[in-house]
Image (cartoon, rainbow, N blue to C red; front, top):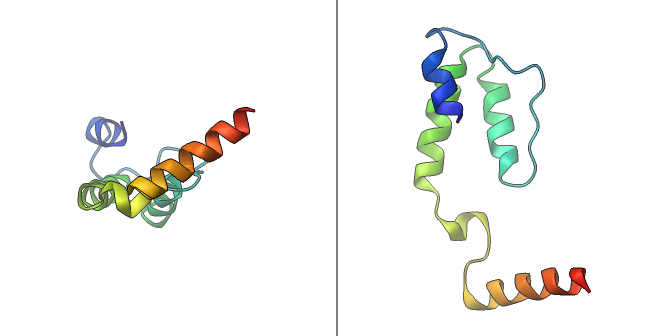
Length: 79
């Protein structure tokens, strides 16, 4: 979505969002957009490269034990 917005805006546009926030992995997006506030397009390009180099295990535990423990936490929260 950010990439599409960046392509629609003029090349040297500042960050168009008055408020930027994120939680967990989304905090990477928020921090990057804040750092590149003067050049929204450069910030989005950096994010695009960054997320293309991540894999699931960089963000959360994707091994069988991690998946089981995470599922157990969700289930216990529902009960």
